[in-house]
Length: 104
Image 1 (cartoon, rainbow, N blue to C red):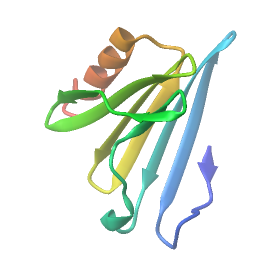
Image 2: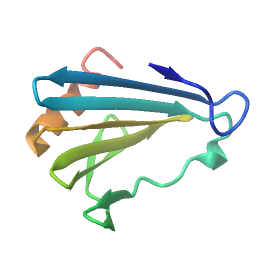
Image 3: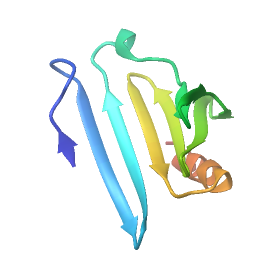
Image 4: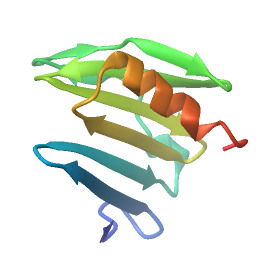
């Protein structure tokens, strides 16, 4: 689903939700016009900030569990991306690796 830009002309936000029964995964991509608008990869964890990283293909991916959901966040160029859902840490790492399998 496309959502109207919220920061300024040229910014793009995309969100897609996948469901399987009671479980869901949400993928978000926000591409910024200016890289100065992109914040560091700290994520919220049960009302605090937390940073646990998984590095692959020269890109740092922050992984956390927050209120029973796993969240992956990373930056690639002018875009920040996230995957949030009912997945394990091992599933998160497999998802990250699958992104780069074909040179992605």
